[in-house]
Amino acid sequence: MLQTVLGEIEAKDVQMVLPHEHLYSDLRSAVAPLDNGIFYDKVALENLGELLRNPYAVLDNALLPGLDVQEKELLKMKNAGCNLLADVTTADFGRDPLLLKETSQKTGVHIIAGCGSYIDAYVSGKIKEQSVEEMKKTIINDLTVGMDGTDIKAGVIGEIGSSMTTSETEYKYLQAAAEAQAETGFGMHIHACLWNDEGLRALKYAISKGANPEKLCIDHADVRLNEDYILGVLNEGSYIEFDDYGKEFYVDRRNRNLLLNSFATDIERSRFIKKLIERGFGKQILVSTDVCLKSMLHTYGGWGYDHIFVNTIPMLEDVGLSAEDINMITRENPIRFLERS
Image (cartoon, rainbow, N blue to C red):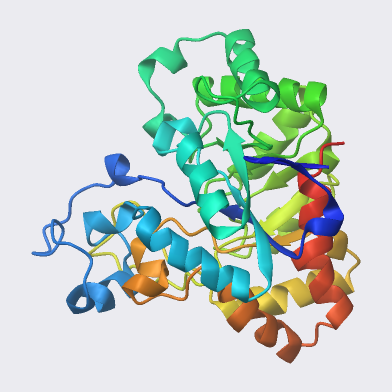
């Protein structure tokens, strides 16, 4: 069974899946200002070119819009064949259980909510002062009773944060989440630093604290496409996630704030996935778009939540994936990861 904001559903009710997305997140608090003349403008056609290179050139881009926009965006995704989305926004940067429930009711899209704590830059001092046991109790409560005083339950743990260097408090989040995962059997997303191999260290730490490696996923592995790092995760028996489809940013040294370097392209991601499947790792691969920017949405000139299904699947076919391979990474794998074991 999969636990959505409207209750449990069976795998047979699921079409294709996006296992790592955001609907109403707000990342503005960690974005450093740029002296570029447009940083405090609203996202518009006039600055879209800048945002295609550095998405944080405009602060407004880090805030996703409301239900009026997201309803239309999700219906495009649904019409493209995907009816389940995991929103891994934690309470630290915008999770709203009631809004997620309303969104699911209005669109008919199944939504799985995340829980736990993100990276330190977004977590309040009050939470940082909690013990591991207190953090774990909150996660288990979110999964089994309800989030934020509601009866709306989360259905996945994470995305749990680890920064460039995992901090002492981030190790506490990881331990609490790992222990909660071991007790509840839900899948667990680990947000990994995009620019180094810290995600592998975080993964091994979570496993050492009792988490089931086969229910863990290391996110954002497709920014650098470091083969040794990715194989290190896969050899632990965990999932690796290619969740930056649609992000092909080139951030030059003049304009770096939140992003420190540039991203691989979609065709590079697709060729890398083909190579991993050929090496026998197909059942450990997840794909998503990790929408967290206005400019990724159709409304603001982007490819939307349906990008995997409209644009990426044909690309995967072009590089040689079979229909069975594509079904495996867009449906079978994410269902297995998100199902409670």
